Image (cartoon, rainbow, N blue to C red; front, side, top):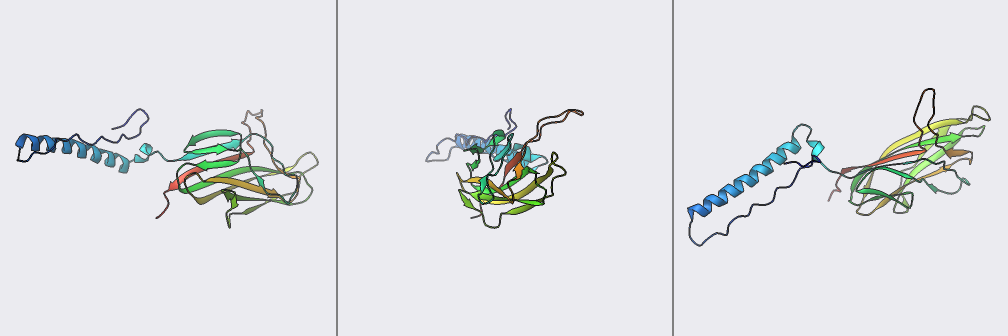
Length: 217
């Protein structure tokens, strides 16, 4: 059985009569019919989930977040948390403190990001991006992205830094995306919608968090 949201409804256990001390054909028949209906419902649910396109009935945690502001670094010796100002989708994963991506259910999660970097210097620069869990850096989660020198004084260079990463999180854990540049001339930049042709704005950050699997025992 399904509801308006195309999610399967768990059938209620049958209300079976209490057995008597002696055999009662009517009572046995009533019990048999109740169990038969119940197991048919369970069989239908399993067949629906395991059949073609059965995944549309599953409800798993996910979240999608972005930012519409520029983000800069005051120096190259500080780790900066990437912040978000917009929640696009949220189901069991929420944003708090601008940078905390919180999960309500433990499991293995796939985290993906797309960061719009800008370099205004005349030299090649690097930007490093890594993950923190509950305020602690995750070992071996760093990536280094190279940015070419600017094209001219008014025309900086741009790259998109993108990555996906699996991380195990427990109930109520939170994740942060951290960054630092090799020069303060490197920043994270947003761009407004434009015309000729009409095209959408460029968020400075896009990040998605998707549930992959429960934690192994």
